[in-house]
Length: 384
Image (cartoon, rainbow, N blue to C red; front, side, top):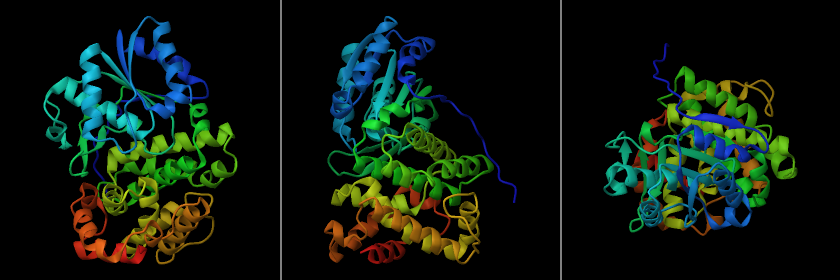
C-alpha cells in the first residue's frame, strides 16, 4: 500500500568525536550573539558544559548558564529557565545534556518566544509565532530529542507528562559528539540505550509509519541492536558509543515522522506516579506490547528482525514477535534493569489507576492495534 508523507528535516546534524569544539562556529551561522545554555549539574561537573560555553565565548558570544534541569523536567524547571532567559534576552538557546536538558530548552523557548503557560502548547502546532533558533548537544544516546520538535514536560502539580510540539520548536542544529557519552554511568547507559532501541522498534509499527519513517527506524535498529550489549561491555569504546549515539538520533527522526506506541503510553504513568525511570519503565512494558501487537502485525516485526544483526535466522510472522519480545526482556535483565513491576514495588491495587492514565496517553492512539483500558490493565498485570 502506498504511504503518503510530508517530510522536512529542520535539523542540521554534525557527527563525530570532538565536534563539541564547533559549537561556537555553528552558533555564529545562526546569527547568535547572546546564548542561553540549558544544562544540568551533572553534565557541568563532567566538564562538558564549561567546554561548550568556552566554544561559544571564543567566537564572541555573551553566554548565560541555566543548570537547574533535573531528570524528567517539570513546569517548575521551565519557569526557572524562563527567568534566566528574560535576564539575558538571548537570541539563541543551546540544550546541552540529556533529553531533559534538550526538552527543557524547548519548553523555555515556547514561553520566551510565545508567552503564556506551557500548558498552552500541550499538543501539536500551537506556537503562536517565530521561536529562537536552538542547538542541541546530546550527552546521552537515548531520547533522540535532538531531532524532534516535541518537548516532554511534566506538570509540576499533577505530574502528568505533556507533549508540546511544533515544527518551530525543532533544533536548527544538533552536535553529536560520542566523546561526551563516555562519562555516562553504566546505569544511565543502560536506561538511555534501551529507550533508544525501543524507539526503533515502536516507530516501525505505528499507525503513522511512512516510507521515510521506516527508513529511519531500520537504520536506527541496525546501529542500536548490535551495539547495546557492546556498549555495556566496552563503555570506553568510542566507536561503539558513536554507533549508539547515531542510532538514537536516527530513532528520533523516526519518532518525528511516525510517533510512538503503547509501550510509551504504559511507561509514562509508571514514571509519573511510581518514580520508575523512563527507560526501565519502557523496557518492562515493551515485550508485553510486542506480544499484544504481534497477533496482528507480526509481519512488521519479522521485517525488522530481518534487517540484520544481532538476531539472524529464519522468522515467521507468528514467531517473530515472541523472539523479539524475549530478546528485549533478556537485554534488560543483562543490563541490570528490573524484569517485573513487582521488583519496582508496584502493587496490584495500583494497576486500575495506571491503566486509566495509560489509555489517555497521546502515543496510545498511534499503536498499530487498539489499546483499551482493559488492555492496559491486562498488560500491566502481565508485567507484574
